[in-house]
Image 1 (cartoon, rainbow, N blue to C red):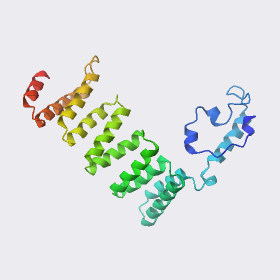
Image 2 (cartoon, rainbow, N blue to C red):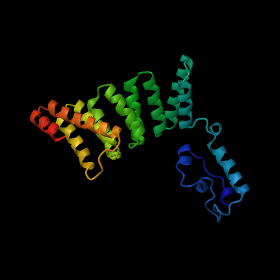
Image 3 (cartoon, helix red, strand yellow):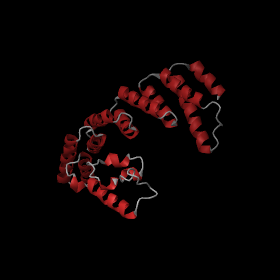
Length: 239
């Protein structure tokens, strides 16, 4: 049976990305299915899987080292912090293509206010996983903090492309354009978002109505900053 095979070492992401628990436990072949697998077969396979992913069996596994470093970094002790950095650097060395290792390194650098190094680490993570929304958000926050407006615009554009149904991505991309002094572009982003609302019911709750009114007020302010005063007045009459 498939449960008797000696499988190769398994990475944590392989476990999380498995299509089903039966495939994960190697119970999907040899006639063994969810319906006829014995309790003993499931238990044996579960124990073997646990041994394959146990950190003690893979002491130099990159993502395991990175997680250890992240935990150590939370302790208020200089020696522990130095050890945390050492572990995370070893993690990157052992698994250069892991976005987890690079992301953890960025988190450590950000906590120590080494923002430029943190940005480099986040970019390293995105080279491995370019569509990771969490890392993109972390990167965008550091970019605006460091006044990297061009980078902020690029990152928020990527987030909007990945998640176009999220209202906050439209608004934040407009803010990014605004910071870049591209007032016409910022207005265009808000108008594009308004076009996506056509045919939908108007805001129902007081919170939704308030947020919508704030967006309209922001759009009007953009007209003013763009020098389009007549358009700003017409917009006030319209809303």
